[in-house]
Length: 368
Image (cartoon, rainbow, N blue to C red):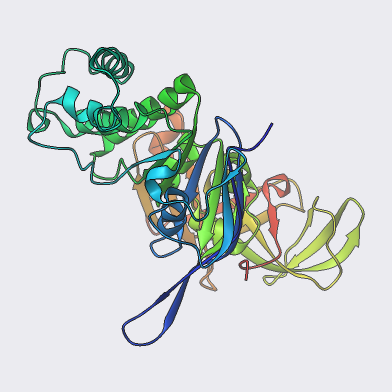
């Protein structure tokens, strides 16, 4: 099956007022499959919005090409590309009713009134706004306005819907609700969504695949589980979720894995192949993989220290501990009722360990 979107070697640079050049996209290549929900994730200035705007046609590439459903659109203007965009600011027409807002693109295209009425009704029902046809924008909540913006973009039946941080203006509870609604809507409509966000949790929750960007380059492309559990470099490990990173060196390598000695002198084993003796590595342990107590396996990473912080975050407790040499480790856990009174307080001694099976090996800091 032909991918719905194929980007090859996309490069985009900007000249700054002080005479410098910023490379917003640096030889980026990306394929999005039919009906796929792909999220562009990264910090401010990483290139994610620029990439979205080159797909929509609002920005021109310096070099590279873009194909949509097998047809090259690199030099087509925005209004001739089979895509629509939902922006962070919904850009709704305040003087128009909801039905008029949704119908706008159809009216401009000369669609008959009877077809417009039918399609607007179906679209408002799909986004849960049936009965709102005659209301004005200022009579709607933020979540309802977001649904109107979605309906207006989807009614023209684009092949790809582009979404530029459309949930960022919503409060936390509504944002979580809209994340699920948006994913459900995408599955029901059956078209590809390309979604931009800097929110890691949002990306993990909604995406089929995530594109992690930094400095105009793709640092990693994979499923949410791949990105979180198996980051390919230190940037991804630190940007997506929280993690503990331990420096070490490969001291022995086999076809099935390797032995690693940490800078603290502890020794462990990892199952990752392809490592060579002398390789400098970092071992990642997510906070939820850190356990309280004494390990019975000498190859687990152990940690003895003092509790520096204890944070209660609803269902979980977060503990930050430090050893005498200043090394820090973060643990997240959910104690049962009997254990809650035993939570170590600030200043208490604590013993922690990471099972060797929970360690992930990182061999590079960043894609360059």
